[in-house]
Length: 124
Image (cartoon, rainbow, N blue to C red; front, side, top):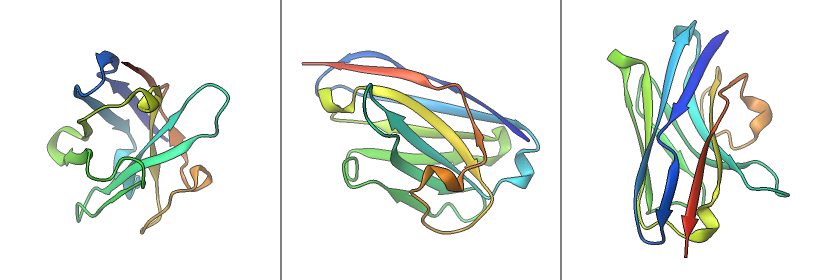
């Protein structure tokens, strides 16, 4: 099992930026990649981004492409999500999750371990 802890959420005005972090521990070496999802009240969990630990191959959801950037620090077992040009519709709880399969996997069911999430609120 991989333990994941998110941090960096908060309240920001529209147009602002935040950087989320996801620190992995435990059997982090078993995971192929980490992904970011978000969920707003009353909505389904939405794929945001993912990145491979080894190759750095990154994927993005359509709603964040061009505004968000995912990166990783293998030495620290940490993945980051830089969020720029934030919009009120980005307001949600953001989760990181680990997966053990390669490729573009936007379905939450492909992820085996989840963090507790960090709240991001964007005011207009």
